[in-house]
Amino acid sequence: MRTTGSETLEQLRGGMVVSCQAYPGEPMRDAETMARIARAAVAGGAAGIRLQGIADLRAAADLEVPVIGLWKDGADGVFITPTLRHALAVAEAGADVVAIDGTRRERPDGLSLAGTIAALRAEHDVLVMADCGSLDDAIAAEAAGADILGTTLAGYTGERPKTEGPDLALIAEIAARCALPIMAEGRIHTPAHAAAALAAGATSVCVGTAITHPTTITGWFVAAIEEGRH
Image (cartoon, rainbow, N blue to C red):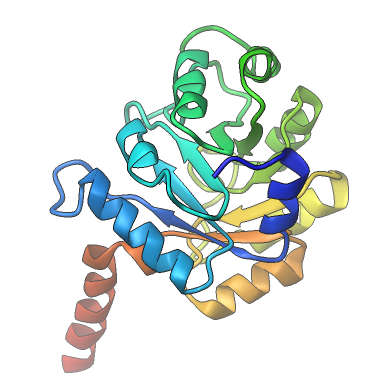
């Protein structure tokens, strides 16, 4: 679904985005499977969908809500849409919003975040979501021209501890210092977590694992049952 930037932001405001992703080698790691999960999430009221990979984006081209696209390349360091080449491919595949690593770490292609955003916008009329790990990341991403600030990498870059649930303190810090919309993402495992993230200052909430990753969800129940046996 292609929308104007202002329309996309308005559609996402106050809503929930569902991240539909599976890890390589898993039974659900299939583009059409992810597209079907995305359609089911939309039927449940999702305001937007976050998808990883070019094939997944193309398979879900019929979605009637804004799509946040990314391309993971690797598993360490800067790997979420890490270069301009990746960002351009995500935009070309139909994403309304391109999610990219929004940290202050060096990018594989040597471009700055501002340079990446400017070059992407020179080719495509898309929004940019900066996946941040700290307040300093968010401040820098806002200055670099991002449209949405995500807390996706909080607890994964070494700047902040990994909280058990969403990093509510970081959400509040960003809301106090930055003017851009904030998408709370990362370890939002319950409806109460989602509500708390909005109360802390998030504009919208992105939930992934707790909705779309049955392997992890099953593990939570199994662990609880095993603990109850002792």
